[in-house]
Length: 210
Image (cartoon, rainbow, N blue to C red; front, side, top):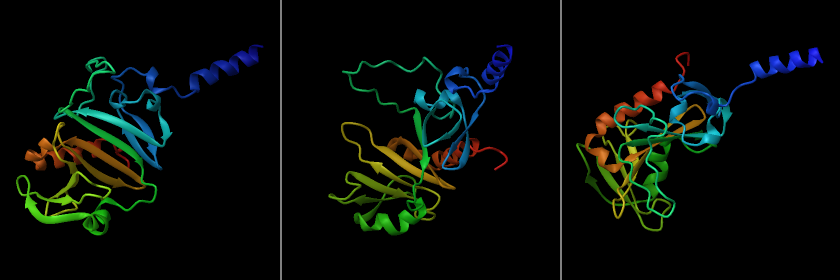
């Protein structure tokens, strides 16, 4: 009985804890997506089921803008289920998941998106250009927004503003993992700063040794 008790105690001490047991101000912990290790701050994880270290299929994060700090626990406004969700224009949403063999973002820009765009190029914000996706395509209701001098540096698919503000989606490929970042289209007025901050955030999510 003493031996079994000792083994049980050692197992309890050494067993990996769920992130939900870790205080929100705990430093970042390692999460592996598609074989790629990311350092994730626990307070940024949106789904409680994902609040654990180790390998996962995907992880959903949120950061305050422009500080890029995780939201403070308990500070998010509560909205009843039967009321419209508030528009969070000061949040950057990030999803990290396996690429599952899809083309890298740069290749999609060259070979996939041109098949579905229509109309002429139009100026967007501060040197950006925009081309509309056609109706009846997988990207109906969206625009392709990019830096014409360096499309590989900044390209995004953005929904058009209507009853709700437009949202932009841009992606980065790291190994076999895709990092998808979503932000309000209004931020394109300062897209150069946005692009720099997105690169900085992704760099902070990667372990220094890799």
